[in-house]
Image (cartoon, one colour):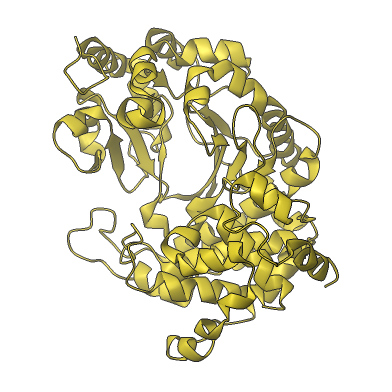
Length: 480
């Protein structure tokens, strides 16, 4: 039976508990967390059980000795990306649809087949560099996970690439009371390694976008930037590296052989009927399975437990392969762009009224102006952020100052839905400006959809026939 207002039945809840009691499942989860002694800083549980307990956000933090408790409460399991022995390389690649989750969750095989050309491209790319990795699957895509140990010579090279902001380093040095994600200062080594692997992930995203043109049915984007509508909605493949917009201590990743019950918690995104009908999934490495074989394992917890006895979920040491990526990165246009980006500083806050805030919004196309006027919507929405970056670059703004403008709004007392004492406004603002301006500066973003017609098709034109022409802005950018 299922209680009123809940879609996770008691039978399903007990099936999760029984699944986690399998020795092989527990061994695989522990492997992913570092082995006999965990190397992750903390664990997180998520699930409907916590909704029933009245949690405003259905999340609970735990340490290693709390793992069994999370399992007995039937929760999805996550581990911190912050690790005591390595910098983790986490690449989240997923199908997105700005209009509905229902199709993705209701037709898993169809949507994984849509992702297949890009999945194979990424596998070939990682293999070409000699990067061993896990390819864990979620209900929306894949996590490609590897690591660079701190004691590897490659890690020193990774640290040299990293460029965490001074303000972020100051935050890393703090240990505020009551924050279970920050029980010790985060070392500079960890901070620089995390920043460095984020830039290398950005470089690999460029490689994938470059190679994916015409290679599959989905447009490949960094984050969920709107595309024109298809019969399924505004869909695409998200190369999601947004974790690198946030402090290392704030990010976590679903463990191998965790359950996946997001659709049982966020019921409104798929509809109550579908949420009740769909099974609890398992997060398992794909290995050499086909999409169809993978789905059969994922949707049956007994099959997943059997699979757990046959595979490893230890995160591979891929230092040598990442060293090869570093070699290619240093020779790339993206690296040159990053160096230029880092050479400029934001205007100091006391100068914002006479610099960033003197921008005449009436001189901007309404799609860009609206994003800034309604900053706590527009400057957190990737499509609008991209429009702001493109527009201001066409006007001669340096990408770092575009980041400065975004930061200046982030630091205003608006309803952001973000606790900036835990996150970092400057880092997130720089991330967005660096990513979208970098695509333009390297010539990878040819601005094909930077037109008024495209903005209307995407649903991001607030004022048709406004008198502005994005095509003119596009020509100005291409001429730079």
